[in-house]
Length: 335
Image: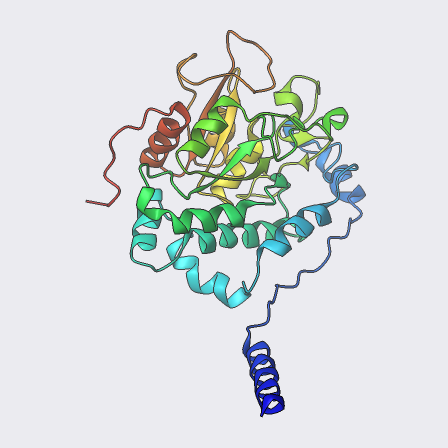
């Protein structure tokens, strides 16, 4: 009798293991560097000096590193999933996305995975790559899962929204390079103050955006949007045909092509407004001092400020408010 019970338990355990859903991950083509010689030579004929490229691909970064951080976060996420939930994410405002989440059309986890998937399929494709993203948060999906479990505590519309930061803004779990080769391994010990504010309101820091190296300060004569770490940021409305503006090039491009709900840039003189106008998104240079400079690689303490870059003005105010940590009263639903 005892042996029969043992056999029954073994059979049940085997059955449960067999029924357990197997973990799957999407497969991506590995990034392979291409010969850009002709493209660079052709660009030298351009009448716009900002489009006369010196390099397009980074010589010190490997886009497969980006892929390797994203892929483990896409458990059971497929191309079909990406297409199925696109109507709830693509070109949508923060208020619209929050409404879809309230209606259980999507979750914060799926939202985050959608953006990560989009980043990889675009940035590792030689024909589509915009060199807009330098690095990705390895814990982004885990953070989204926690927020899904704590939706009842949502106090601000930025809650659960993936945001990209210009890579001169300190993050304690993602390196901050300013696009400069000598800072490629620079890991801050603390988040910048605005990052702390964003996180305290529930925002997800999705990753870091490319920029004009050191916010256009250490690379005299470089085209807008070029950095040694990120390569040449390209304008999605005309790859190698239109200037990206700078220096918050990757932040504006990331917003324009739906890599995140919005992005944070920094400006000393035109570095938010210029790329925002070039990519047809909304950029704000706030009054100096209204947002903290703490934890941002500096140029001028009397001119520098971070600022939000979004698809529309309401989203811009929402992101700006979260960066200030003002906790203004919002109507989360569309009128």
